[in-house]
Length: 230
Image (cartoon, rainbow, N blue to C red; front, side):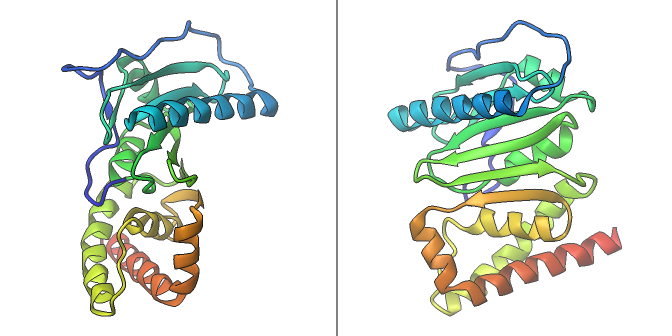
């Protein structure tokens, strides 16, 4: 995610440029074995990271978690976003679907508000995975998306206040804004969130654990307050 709310992946094909994602043949719903899912996830990571590191652009792979089928892969030749193809958007609109969306983040930031807004909108999108070029990995899984989109706006405003507080203490939150937001969203039950940080940010988070925990707690408190009012 960038520090703003720009989508990292968008609905529909790129109208201006980019390769069209490759569409897999349709399959009947089924149950995917764990080893098959693990292989698909590994292949998706290799595709988006390998191509992303070569080009500096975002790439995507969409996987049907019920069949294990790769639904699409591709790029929009843009370092800040990649388009979700039309047929995947249609499938993701069906609450009975279970789609995982894997993509790379050249800036190595966590899953963006734009990513999560699509998850809130498309009830068949179960999981979003972002791979940072620095070795980081971030996963958001749908939980309670009823308030998710509106609470992203709440978190954005509160994070701005917390960033000012941090700056007054000589603490930069650059590169961690989305991560801390997602931790707060997890604490408030809006998403399930997993992450692996790169060694540099991991060390920074350990050194500044007290201050960062305070910021996440403030974000979570504000979200809880606003959910109560809504």
